[in-house]
Length: 207
Ligand code: AP5
Ligand code: MG
Figure 1 (cartoon, helix red, strand yellow):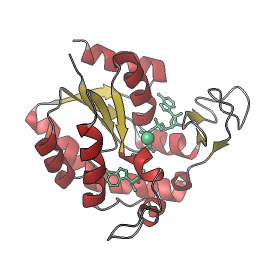
Figure 2 (tube, helix red, strand yellow):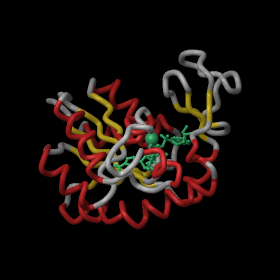
Figure 3 (tube, protein in one colour):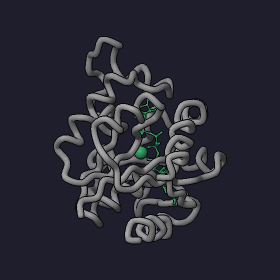
Figure 4 (cartoon, rainbow, N blue to C red):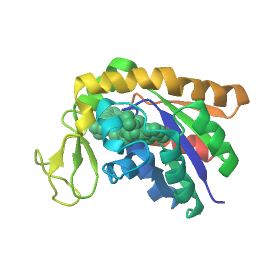
């Protein structure tokens, strides 16, 4: 069976961390608007470049992200979708272009999210995720996977992290309510080690 999995959660909830594990375990594509936009920050669009929105912690305009997702899903035979939809308009668009087999919401408390975001480090080369306290690399500043340099994302300062959380509570919580109302949402407690959270998600998918 091909898996079409939607992973919802606030900034820092562990979407990227769990998506990487899911992609490996189930052999599906990791489709993530955040990574796609970071790779195209200075792409010219009629709304300007993604960079200005991202560095302010705001949403990039819907037409830009809708197009990214549509192209990525058209190429994928099974996927885990991370970072989309982030508002009801995007949710409506998604329902027009694909069906989903599972919708999982990773639930994590706000203060835990801020600690996860401000301590995150990512590999400049391969994109692997670390955390200075919760998932430290063997050698500070160096990627365990590829030896690349670990950097802090521009939007992981405390100020921008809090702005992103505000944007999430205002725009994306209604999306979670929407899937809950439809009876499709499975909530997973995201406050445990990455491996424990992964086991919980696997439990849901293998049911
Ligand atoms: P995006 O890249 O999607 O960022 P986000 O939603 O804010 O989520 P994050 O990537 O910050 O968190 P995550 O849930 O992936 O957590 P992670 O696994 O890394 O979007 C960035 C920007 O792009 C947006 O602000 C917007 O501008 C734009 N954008 C993207 N999609 C868009 C859309 N659809 N529409 C419009 N604009 C869009 O984990 C975080 C940290 O915690 C890591 O350090 C990790 O090591 C650690 N950690 C993970 N799991 C655990 C655990 N279980 N225990 C302890 N630590 C953990
Ligand atoms: Mg992410």
